[in-house]
Image (cartoon, rainbow, N blue to C red; front, side, top):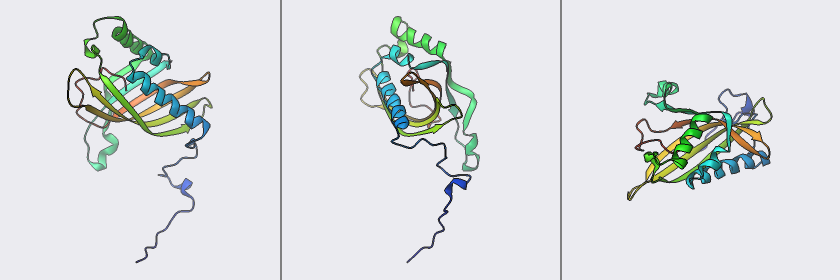
Length: 193
């Protein structure tokens, strides 16, 4: 049985085309540099090298995680509630959190620290109007274990980042984290995503 399908010849004109003309090609030098930046970031966080991670943040950083609600298919655009946040951080507040974790004994939420593995996938990069800035979308799957727990806690999310060239690498200027769960599977969000 043969099926006749209409295949559009000009997909760039479709309003809902998944690939935009400003997409940075997978495997290009810029794409590879950005992917490496994200992989190194995950490694630094997993190894609890927080001071080195903070050095990769830009001073105008906005780091947010809005709440998620379950909505019908018709109302999916309203499932992310940006008026209520799990956290809404700046460069200064993250430096303060990292200092509390690394320099004091009062950070009980992460002492002893969680054992984490951050798996970064599905990286899509787009150029912007500024030649040294890139919009980056990535998926993150984070496993977390503490104390002598026998089960891993899991959290999956999509991250919308703005990366800015800085010397031979990049700095994170903006990150919005959209968690897939409406009720978190973690007891707290004391780790960085």
